[in-house]
Length: 223
Image (cartoon, rainbow, N blue to C red):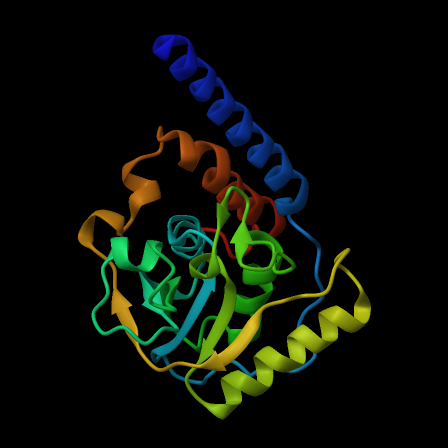
């Protein structure tokens, strides 16, 4: 009887995973979006700017932005909570208030914040899902932009308003736009996880399609 129960439970888990995959694939296909009406201009000289974003499992977000021209570094980590120096298990419990996040360092002479946000909203995640992305649920998987200054806040809020007014998504955008209070780098094994584990079932099912969408929708940005 125990073996039968175990097999039944295993089958149920597989069904739930497949259902999550189908649901995710139905909502995560790249959405063609307009350029931001409010954006910064390309800088005259090379430099480094930083923005922190969250949109589900950080493996996929990091994988997408590591393939964007003008991004010099994308780092998985945790932001938005109160716990100091949290670890993965603590964040996964949902008790810390942190979200799985990615710190993006980019060259403002090559790419603007608005363009990064266009990629974020169109191919990196579904900004209409509240506290979840695909099979992952909980506040640690929420959609958020953690701004470091008023210009970032202004550009992000203007783009969200622009997209909501255009009704390009079937539901309103639920992305939080909140001040960055800290970014904590995730454990080493989370860094470049998609690149190091291309045959991982989760990566193949949920994250590799995001990178493919980036290549298809933004061929001029893809590297």
